[in-house]
Each structure stands twice: as C-alpha cells, then as structure tokens.
Length: 118
Image 1 (cartoon, rainbow, N blue to C red):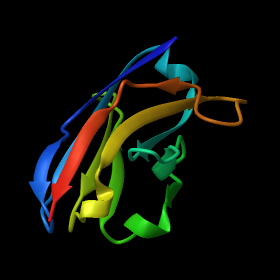
Image 2: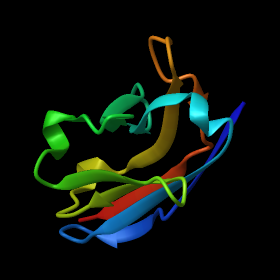
Image 3: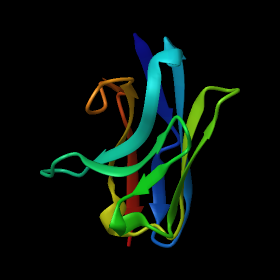
Image 4: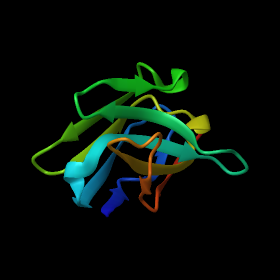
C-alpha cells in the first residue's frame, strides 16, 4: 500500500507560479515511477509530467519549458514547479505512483485544485 498526499494548490493569476508537493508514505520501495496528472471539468485525466526511479522524465507538450518535475528521495516527496501559468492549466492535479511491473499508475492522491485566473 502506498499513500500519496498532495498540497500546494490554490488561486494564481496568469503568468504566476505555484509549486505542488506530493508526500509519499507506506511501501514506497515498491514504486517504479511517479507522476502528476490533471483533470479539468468535463475532461479526462491527462498526464502532466512523470519521473521514473532512474530519473527519466516525461512532459506533456502543453507544459514543456514551463513545468518541472522533481523528487526529494530523502523526504519522500515529489514536486511540480509550475511557471508561466495559463488559465488552461486550471484543473485538479493528482499525484500518482506506479509499482514495479504495472502498466500504469496504480495509487493516487486525492488531488489539489489549481485555478489560474486571466
């Protein structure tokens, strides 16, 4: 079992920045990759960024050069630095983790809301 708790969401003006955090606990030694996903109203959940155990990162085209995913292994925390935010970035942001041998993320946090005003 892996527990994930997101924090750092809020209201920000377009062009501003936020940093999201995801604290992981439980059987974290089973984690092979972690990532940030988002879901806007009426839309499907989509990948924002992910990082594997060995540090390989993936970003959605819409956030490249604006968002940065990072991790602090000592503190068991995943981060998402979001710069140059746009109104279309407004969504609930979820932290997910994938265990070794699994095809996709199989543990999720409850999400944190990011609202970007124009």
